[in-house]
Amino acid sequence: MNHGAEPITERTILTNKILRNFLYKTTIDGLSNIEINQIKMWIIPQKTENDDSYEINSGYYESMINQVLDELTNAGYLHYNFGDGIEDNDEKLFSLTKVGLDYASRIDNKNNYSEV
Image 1 (cartoon, rainbow, N blue to C red):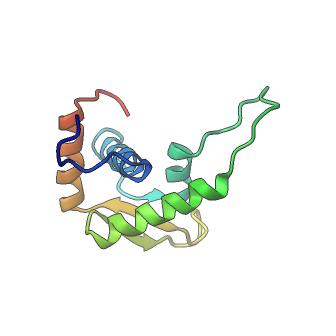
Image 2 (cartoon, rainbow, N blue to C red; image 1 turned 135 degrees about the vertical axis):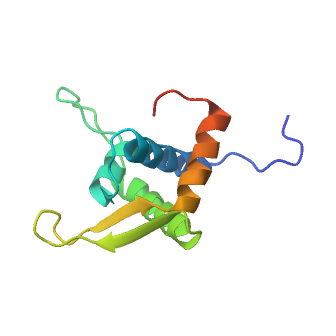
């Protein structure tokens, strides 16, 4: 039962998934800056080679991702800068802040997931 706890919403799930992926990419893969397109690949279901019935509203997912990234940035969990334009087409590059790293670690430990 949910006694006074916040309901788990799509946004909560999306936020946790994004933060946990950042945690994994930062601590395991050693990446510090992650492009928006990489983040979208974590979330938006991809069409498979033989999937003729692929129908998805990618605009919905992109809108949710942008809202969550804005919230995480405003909360101080993520920081962004713009790339140099040579390899990344001047896209926003996101990275975890120290506060974000601590929060993502708590989420990961609470859920005790071994993989993202």
